[in-house]
Image (cartoon, rainbow over all chains, first blue to last red; front, top):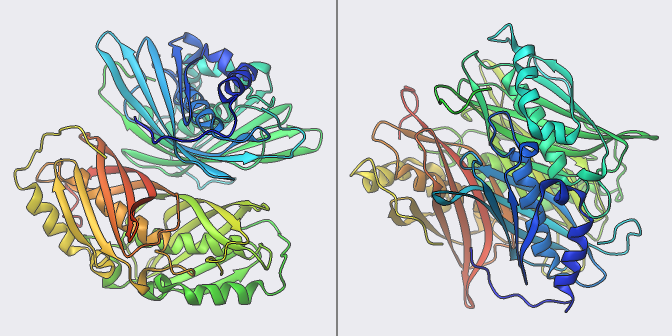
Amino acid sequence: MTSPAFEVKSPRYVERVQDSFALQGAMQTLGARLARVEPGAVDIALDWAPGLTQQHGFLHAGMVATALDSACGYAGFTLMAEDAAVLTIEFKINLLAPAQGERFRMEGRVLKPGRTITVAEGRAYAIGPQGEKLVATMGCTLMAVTGRENIRN
Amino acid sequence: MTSPAFEVKSPRYVERVQDSFALQGAMQTLGARLARVEPGAVDIALDWAPGLTQQHGFLHAGMVATALDSACGYAGFTLMAEDAAVLTIEFKINLLAPAQGERFRMEGRVLKPGRTITVAEGRAYAIGPQGEKLVATMGCTLMAVTGRENIRN
Amino acid sequence: MTSPAFEVKSPRYVERVQDSFALQGAMQTLGARLARVEPGAVDIALDWAPGLTQQHGFLHAGMVATALDSACGYAGFTLMAEDAAVLTIEFKINLLAPAQGERFRMEGRVLKPGRTITVAEGRAYAIGPQGEKLVATMGCTLMAVTGRENIRN
Amino acid sequence: MTSPAFEVKSPRYVERVQDSFALQGAMQTLGARLARVEPGAVDIALDWAPGLTQQHGFLHAGMVATALDSACGYAGFTLMAEDAAVLTIEFKINLLAPAQGERFRMEGRVLKPGRTITVAEGRAYAIGPQGEKLVATMGCTLMAVTGRENIRN
């Protein structure tokens, strides 16, 4: 997916994403890495592991969603102000094919940034001997939150 | 949530759910247990753990989705025939409040069973000192799959 | 569907819904009426008409969505402050059965009201000689908007 | 949006879409026209009209959804066999901006065709003096139905 050019509000957007990502216990559980952080675009990479599977040995749809949600959330976060935290309001995922592969790449792309509401899209690719295959798409609504003491990124 | 009365096609539906659940590596990673298995209704219980969190220490939306997806999927699976496997086609989750709690209960309920397509709903509750709080809802479409060699439940 | 008890912020909530509903050209096109307006709960009624159909003569999924979206939106609007307008951020609809009937009743219910974001659910029932049948469910995210000159309810 | 190249199963796919579209009373109510019919890709065009509006005079989200659903549904239908009818299982729409414009173009694109299940995406553009603006996106799941007497396209 390509993405329109967006202007960042914080020059520290890469560091801010990295710092927040490091705080997500779920990303460590997934063995997930930040593979790309650009304005409005974040990629997350991870490998197949037995602790991430559903009953047929494929990646569990929820684990695909976990990585896609972080990719979309951080794509939105790259465009937010320094004092903002990001929360997911909702997302929807379509599973196009079994998430069968050795490695996976999750793309999060901002479609429409906003002061309060940001809309992002995600695509999940399974990577195996035959190359990349699109296995899931996500539509995601994010909210920029400021001034809540118990929420910081 | 209450649920209409549904007829099962397999008398072994509880055992079938338990066996399939035990194969989901993701459920072990979540520390999730089957708390209820009835025709068209499955509850999954889990505890807060640092490996399941987002950056503020709440349960990651994707981990909430993972447990809800399994709850919905197995709720649908209770009503399927012996030779059928269940796959999630899509789901959507609304996060109503931060998933903050010591324990969580995920409800999956069949809304409309079908030969091929089953629609289910899920609700996630956070449990803490103040009692239960609804933190997320899911709408989920499932497909009964038969005759695919690499897919069994 | 039942709904928790909600407190209104405007004593004129019924009138406000009625006034806004009357401005929706789409509701007139659907021949839709407000059948119930209570705090957090709005029902909309409409009759089958040839101008609302898809190719098999059932109600078009989009027309079901149009009525459900208004029901959910106005359910949220009943709980908003006097200076707020309501906008739909997103909705998802599951079509459980063909929308075949003489009349239809669309229920919108607030699940979680909020200062900015409100989450609502909808259910569409087809009414015929055999009684009521659930044909669709909706999950819906609404935003309260204030201070935008070109948006008033 | 571009779309991968798909193979059609019926050489009459354009005529089949046109015939079915003509049966949709909802499309006549919208004043909608088929602007493009290609394998896996259908565009629908329509003009602003007072009967399609919400309370602020913008196109009602449900009317945007109605046109997008038909665009996605017919995009899927172009790839289906002669004896298949198409039904929408579910769709989700994100409203990115008020649907304000003189004319609208709705794009439906197949993402993943299947024997039973097809996944499509839609984009709605408002057209005004300033050009085109993306106002909504849709994710849509379709089912190919055969052998049901009361459903034909």
